[in-house]
Length: 130
Image: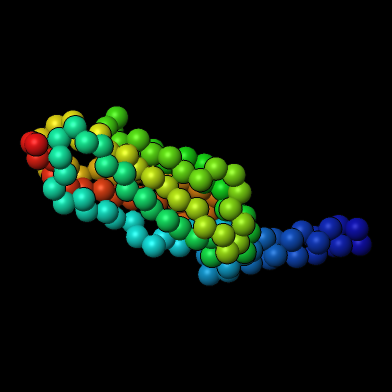
């Protein structure tokens, strides 16, 4: 009888866990972005530019951004620290050091406690001589 009850308890726990982990179940943190791409157009040499990527936690649990990493040393990322409650907003910024003439396409990879995995933000433009 004890084994039967233990089995039923375990089965109920697994069904509950599966329900919570389904991607269509809104019981998680969700990042909803206003945009994930910024095109600077033409920018001046040696004048860094900053892209601001705003997001909202549209999920039901607190959101925590773990990291934001630029694709190279010329792109430095920063992000909202601490828990972002459901309904609240946060931001990731990407500063591009315009130290070389030419077209650029850079990315920032953002990791958070969401079930969707990392998000890739994109910046692009062309650095022109003054």
